[in-house]
Amino acid sequence: MDAGRGEGVRRGIGGNHIGDDVGVPPSRTDEGDVTMRLAGARVLITGASSGIGAATARAMTEVGARVVLSGRDRERLEAVASETGGQALTCDLTTDVAGLAERAGTVDVLVCNAGTGWAGPFATMPDETVEHMVACNLTAPIRLTRSLLPAMIERGRGHLVFVASIAGAVGVRDEAVYAATKAGLLVFAESLRYELRGIGVSVVLPGVVDTPFFERRGAPYTRRWPVPIPAERVARAVVAAVEHGRPETYAPGWLRLPARLKGAVPGPFRALAGVFGRQ
Image 1 (cartoon, rainbow, N blue to C red):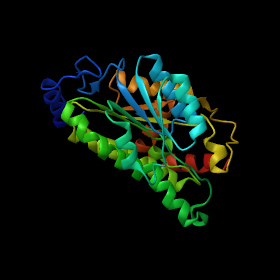
Image 2: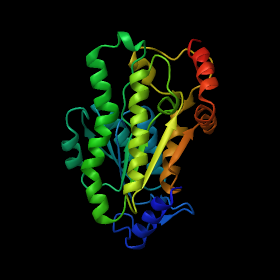
Image 3: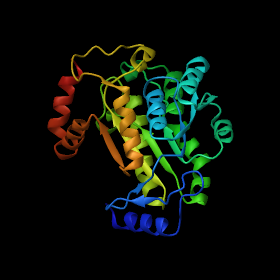
Image 4: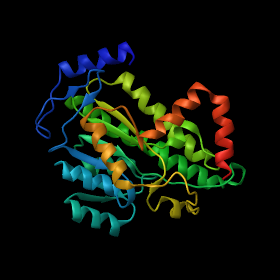
């Protein structure tokens, strides 16, 4: 870890304590990353009406967190809220980030999970689809973070979690804009780590997950490998990222290998990825 970043986190923790909502002081790992006990914490989860977001709501509730759930599908969102004892806030993040932040109130942990996809050659991608995807996957998380972060800094506690994708780390054929938005989240999170003291910043990078995502993007997942993992596995990774102060988590863990391979030998990696991408 960068020495300046680690020192900044240590100074921030030394002067701040978690307040009434959580009831315990923050701590840090040996590398200086901020950890937080989730029992009693107030957690805002976007994209919580199904898939990873709904699974994360359940996982957070299991460890004693209080969840605030955001999504566009009112019926599904309220069903998840009823199951978890959470608060449902129907919202379209592409148009009403400020309204969501105001209604959510005090937030100890923000999980930016909402996202949309589209598959096909970039040259055929409609302009309006490009704009909507960038607005939902990248602009909305940035703006929501901007709305909630000052209060976290003032209270001296908080954690930001961004659900990105392995696509953002390595690029994926026929998903150019989706991959670009997720890469943007990775760099946004990394940059925040250099700025913040006492506030945790985590990124979770799933691979293929068994959720309605592929059906909604209009292109079902048809490859035999890799096999989709359950959304609950990603949800557990989100919880662990906060509780153990993990800045970057791959789900499943072996996805770290292609990300490292791309950095070490980009030429051979691109050749392999090109072959795999056509399958």
